[in-house]
Image (cartoon, rainbow, N blue to C red; front, side, top):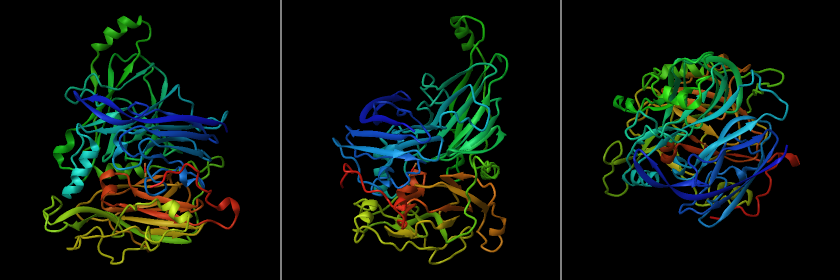
Length: 554
Ligand code: C2O
């Protein structure tokens, strides 16, 4: 591989959407941020200089960071934030992976505007395991607030309330023609008749899982989370925040005399049905083959538009049917290295809960004496004020974290039945410690406390295999025999089904401290997050590397 250098200057910039201008945090003044392109085996050296009025930290979502946790990025987990006026160099190798990933801010809610694609191409001369597309285009979904998102989250936390929902969803930063005052801000993909395009779909939205579809065109899924899958074709697909999906779209072999919307709207069981009216649209625009471009352009304006039909807001079974189709290639060239045996088995509940409202204050939580919280095994994770990874490395864990994350709920209950009366959760900065090289099995069980919701759980530092999923309560006797240990999908972000569970396995071969959290930012903020500590192995290449000299200090 080669070494590629990028300069990321974090600056404020004025951006106008929906007829209103606000000052946002950006990288190099761009929104969405710049695209990083590398090849498998390359080293990336990204110098981040913070010239904005916010502390910043950047995460390379899905990059494994083998032994280089210092470059992973989540604030207070692997590093202290880069303060205004300071810089930090993220230096890592892209080893053993290729496909669509992305990067984003990993502090507070700054990823609302600070994100971009990270495309890892195969090694030179290595083809895709499917016919090469004519063109490849990143399609990033996001959310736009008219207000400053840092203010949105701060106000919500102070009141113990749910934060305001976004004012628009976006494709490549553009809300599109279905929102007021937004027609000129529409993403257009020009296509040539007869050509195949690969869309690199990335869901960078803060709080919404999405359905995506292109009118009158089917989509062939070939990769998720930068891992190839057995191809299958759908009209509509779900994609959760944190996930990426590559699809092939075959343009019609003739000039169709029409243009087509590509649209996305939320999948949610938590929003009121009236929320079903927010839809971002971009346009798939056919290039007129023969005419001079000016007359084609005026002709195109008159073309009718076709709109796709998207599922209902709360169509959980649509999502379940789609995810059940995902399979690894599991070929000699792209094997599925599923752990066949388990050294450490864990059972984590994930869901919402409450904290009592502090003092005599009135909160705007689920009741006026409670505020919203969220937890894993009833522990609402508190971010430390010093970075966990360095505390571990320097042997200074005392007062920063404890190593007693519960392996299973302390008080089992009917997770998907009537919730317990007391919904309060505990707080703490607890880590789950596993030895180097352990085969880990983790069952993530959704709860029905304060609503039945899907949670896209993201694990840093690893890919994992999704060996099983189901609705209701996980059954430790009857479910494991049905696990797929042959060709389960391998990914870095998995939806814990609304009212259900998912089982994952991974090999703990990456020493360091690794964040795991719901990629719905509101749930992360409320505490639906925890961290793993994978210990060093005994051999030199099984140890965490020492920190770089410019690692930021808290
Ligand atoms: Cu994409 Cu911890 O995040």
